[in-house]
Image (tube, rainbow, N blue to C red; front, side, top):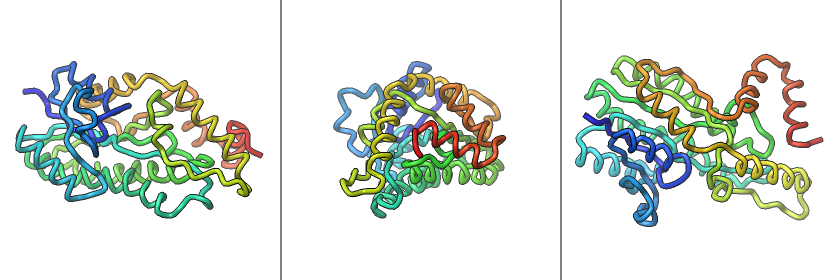
Amino acid sequence: MSKVVLITGGSSGIGKAIGAYLLSKNYVVYGTSRNPDKYSDTSPFPLLKMEVTCLESVQESVSNLLQQEGRIDVLVNNAGVGITGPIEETPNPEIEKAFATNLYGPINVIKAVLPTMRKQGSGTVINITSIAGYMGLPYRGIYSATKAALEITIEALRMEVRQFGVKMTNIAPGDFATNIAASRYHAPQLENSPYKKEYGNTLKLMDEHVDAGEDPDKMAKVVHQIIETKNPKVHYKVGSFLQKFSVVLKKILPDKTYERMLLNHYKLK
């Protein structure tokens, strides 16, 4: 029997690449989108309407999938938002929105699918986090915090659900060539801001990294490998050698040495 996979944020970027690859491997794939009709002609798999920050929307979408397929074998929590800006100048509603989407959203979807997976005695939940979640990055502090919080939450949750035969893991990608740079929230570059110059330079550097990022198919292949793995690891990291090595360096370097390395990388004083 083909496994049924649900991918949040499946209309573009990494989510779409994962869905298309799993479809080619004979999985039954469903994605989600806040506006599925917008992608009805371009998506290779069905898209369900879901707003991950709304519990009613999540429950309705999962219920619709269960009515059609009767089971959910794999959840890929991919939906998320980017956010940049000096923390001092980032509006609180945007900070709350980032946490609502990147942390509470995945938790909402996990809560919706767990009763079914528990009844099945099996299931795999894969959460797309970020290498940025392993470090506080300048002008991306809120984004780093949302992804770090998700990583730690899943560390705990995977131990809680292990008794039910449910497997859970995190994949932290580095920079991939997607449209995330265009869709993320940027705190406005204020003319009289003391952060104006350094924030502007950092934004340019971040966009260059995404434009030169890796093929999302690389993430799709890792997701497939995890689904087929009997006992997935707690964490996976997917990206360039330097991005993955930066996580190792944070563990072994003194804090101020690592901070200086980041300051030099972003050309900050």
